[in-house]
Length: 148
Ligand code: ZN
Image (tube, rainbow, N blue to C red; front, top):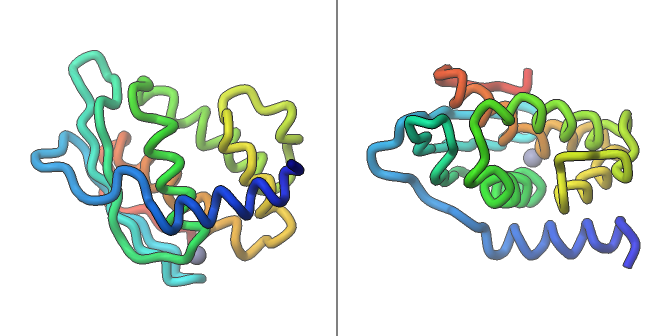
């Protein structure tokens, strides 16, 4: 299957059945994200343990299919990883989603490489990257992320 049809199929699946949807009670970190261009809203709650590992995270909010699928896939991808990896992940995700990095060259993204599919739709890049900016702001102890 080519990257494009894989992209469409995975986006549809995660949009219909978002993983890790909801809010954690007593999160150690949380942040709100907003993409005014599309109207996507996202709230992330995380539990980061004393070793700095993301033990659990959930997202909730209202957004388009791409923002929802991206958040759903992000939660699966970062669970169990050190919070300090978020910056490098965000950077690589952004490079792939904007077409600056060939998805085949991506080292950290696994199946998130399919977001190379948004590179041809520049206005959707912010939908895909919103959750990553929000996660970065949560682990940096900020409160609000915006794509603007
Ligand atoms: Zn959107």
